[in-house]
Amino acid sequence: MRVSNLKKIIENFLNNNKASNIISIDLKKKSHIADYMIIASGTSSRHLQSLSENLILELKKTGIENCRMEGKESEDWKLVDAIDIIVHLFHPEKRNFYDLEKMWSEPIPKEKAMI
Image 1 (cartoon, rainbow, N blue to C red):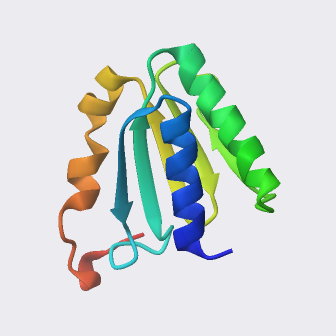
Image 2: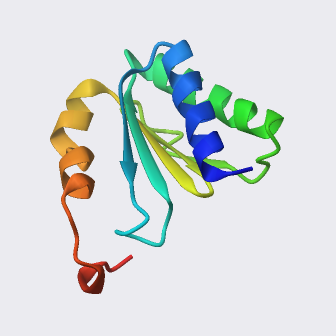
Image 3: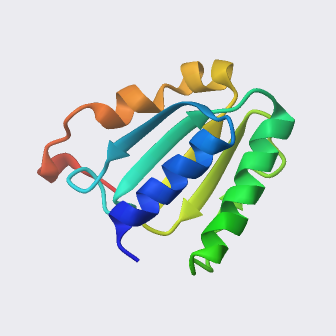
């Protein structure tokens, strides 16, 4: 599956499941860890858990079998590693605190990209 199709599937899933403030960041020229980072907010720890678990199930339906979740014990943050796309799901206050959008949206010269 093409990464652009996978990105649309994830964004649509998050939108349809009431995630808010969904932002996609192109990482192709910034890092080798993934092609995209998607960041979204949930309304509660239960919502974050549901989003992350059901996103993994949705990705398995599309044939992406080796996805994994980080932050299972956290109430404020979950990460879904969808191979070429990293999905961060935050409680709004934690999202503001870490401000990943600012960190990853700024241009990074290729020679300074460390990951």
